[in-house]
Every structure is written in structure tokens, then in C-alpha cells.
Length: 259
Ligand SMILES: Nc1ncnc2c1ncn2[C@@H]1O[C@H](COP(=O)(O)OP(=O)(O)OP(=O)(O)O)[C@@H](O)[C@H]1O
Ligand SMILES: [Mg+2]
Image (cartoon, rainbow, N blue to C red):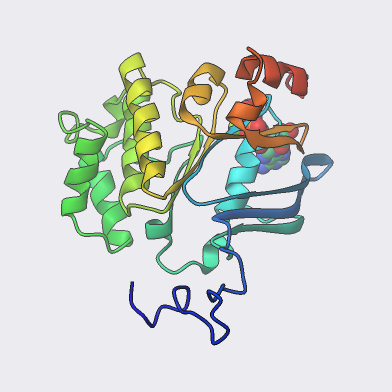
């Protein structure tokens, strides 16, 4: 660290110089509300995520998880409040592919294109060198199927391809919606280990999932929403004290029914 670094500098009074602003959270939802006509999908939700954390995003069907993720990614606009990544709206980020990678519910693949070509096009659009395509294909263990048309892929293969696309820019934040959907047990284990390692390098993961046992193993924090409202944002350890499983806590805190 150089002597000119302001954080390391010592003030004239001999006290360490502290930056005025605390570090900006990676994700910040401030009083976010989202209405679709009569449906109040998100109701005044506020939470922040710090760098280096893996957060499980839980809630019953229709609770508002995907809507929240879409708001964060600028795919839909809040009716009120702010959904920010790195202190900005997603659309205002420079080089968004290098900051945020996402796999949402509906992967938009051209069925006639090969997995490799799909990734090459994404890389080209985001000014990412083509060799990175080969790296992410290896990372998600999809080299063998890379030249097959996406229409011939199984559900799990599509998930892996989606993840490969999200990882192209080595983003600081990964946003995943039901990523274990369709993955075989080896794939689920691989993903769990991968997410932990990803966050250990100071990156941040927000993962919506219904597979609570898997979530419990992979995350250090949990956000639960129900009926569009924030129910809890807590460390996994605090939620699962005294022999209580994440499933116990979840079912206590939510009705467990689709709206
Ligand atoms: N484009 C839309 N138009 C109208 N209503 C919508 C739209 N998108 C979501 N909703 C509604 O918003 C609510 C939240 O939906 P959302 O998809 O965010 O739930 P979810 O928590 O992701 O559920 P699941 O676990 O089933 O994926 C639901 O009532 C849903 O019907
Ligand atoms: Mg959803």
C-alpha cells in the first residue's frame, strides 16, 4: 500500500484517517415497491448486501424474488424506491458485464445456436476476449457439449450455459434465480463449492432458491420475503440456532403457500 493512499494516511493529530463514507454496499434496496396493476409484487422492501457475502433469497412462490432480481438488473422499474448495485442503477454502470453477472428464470438462448457461439456473441457484445469463452466452458464443465445446438441441451445443461454466460466478465456480483433447477447432484455440489469460493475472493452472491437444504450449506446470510414484504435478513447461524434447521425457520416465518 502506498503512502499516498488516503486510508493508510495518518492525520496531523496522529489519528488514522478514516474515509467519511462507509463502503457502499454491493446491493442496496431502499423502500422498493413494485406494482403490476392491482398486484403489489414488492411492498416497501429495504435491505443491503456487503461484498464477500453469499446470501440466500427465499420466499414462497409468488413472494417477489424474481421481481426483486429483475429490479436490481434494471429489467423492470420500481414503482417507488431505489434498487441499486454498487451505488448506482444497473443501467448506469460502466461495463456492467464485469460488475454483475446474472442467471434469471427464463434463459434467452437462440435454440439453433451452439453453446460456444452463444457465449462468443455475449463476449463480443461485452468486449470480453474470446479466450474467456473457453475458460467459462471449462469452469461449468460444458466443453463436450459446446458445439451442439442449444435446442438439444438438457435443463441442467442450459443452467450451466446460463451460468457460463454470467461468469464471462468475472463479475463482482452474481445474481442467480433458482440455479440448481435441473442440476444433477454432482452439479449441485459443484455449484455450492463454486459459490463459496467465489465469495471468498471478496465477490458477492445473491441466490434465490427453494432448495433449503442446499441453501443452508452454501450461504452465510438469508433474506426471506413473503407476500412482497421483507420478513427477515439475518446470518444463517442466527436463524439455525438450537437445532432449528433453515427449513424450520423458513416455515415458521412464511405461510409456505403460493399467493
Ligand atoms: N410482469 C408481471 N405482470 C404482472 N404480475 C407480475 C409480473 N411479474 C410478476 N408478477 C406478480 O408479482 C408477484 C411476484 O412474482 P415473482 O415472480 O417475483 O415471485 P417469485 O418469488 O419469484 O416466485 P417463484 O418462487 O414462483 O419463482 C406474483 O404475484 C406475480 O404474479
Ligand atoms: Mg421466481
